Length: 416
Image (cartoon, rainbow, N blue to C red; front, top):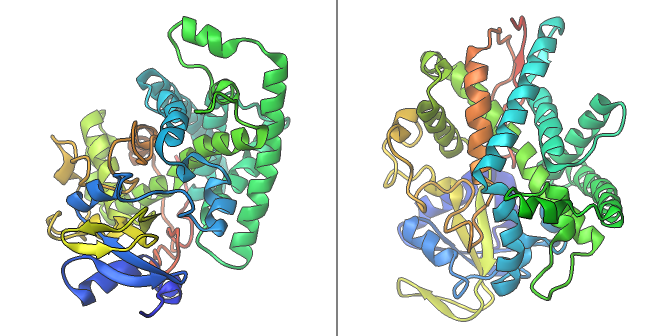
């Protein structure tokens, strides 16, 4: 069977949906990285994919992705009790409603601080500025101090966190920048974890007694895995990055939201209102409509079947996220941006899958989804209320590039 690694690199997000259209209904068989692969989509496929009896993660992620996006030994590479024990750390931090609200509040304060500075600039590249303000917010929320001068450190950290995401699916300079950025940030955070453990302030225990979550730094430093042992400093740094990096990655969605408002100016007024339900519906539609992760992958742990189709042990199993989020069998007019499809209703658990499916607490769904929605619901209405001009620029979003975004980064001028 023809290996489609090169077509994937050339076509990007369009590769798997295009292959599915050409092959017709049912699972799509191909090869990737020399391995046989089977691609699935649809709510039932989501349930199948997130059942560890059918698909496992250990050894499924290629080394280039681990060395850039997730990190060696990360929670995303674990299965079974090891995964559930490590995942509980993230669920406690990222699905705690007061904690999520506190992070959103910090993002709001950083937005207001940045908004006061932008009128003095001749132009503002929204992608760059939003990545910095989210970095400042999430580091403070997580208990990670910024070295002085703090603004310079925030920009350096934001560049590193963006580079890790930007280079995971690339070759050449983007990928090398991502590797260097990860090594740099892992070293810094590993030292921080060692310092926290040496200080032994008991912050994690005090937080538990007070009924509040500890800071992310203290929670990760105090965590014990399924074997009862604490994380080594490097792995602890990896997991700290798996909290702050995905939060900063919300920058992509925020800029997509700006793109949606520019293309659909009639949506600005309803989004600008103090309507939490509409803001969340708009955030859901941004996550559905715009591309972020093309698919997720795992390995078949044994010979399994999907609707009578055999999947051999060791085969790659792909869940087509981008294709499912644009499937006309699931979504009316899937290539129309329409927040109304989510007003008055929450999407089904395995229906909208930009950050995976299944249960976050027990499976591999991203536990930071609540954070993503809270940050977007905080930023997008403020963006809709902001007065600015969009000068001529290249706002095309190339589907060949993973991850993608407006080529210009979305430049605004005359901010008021």
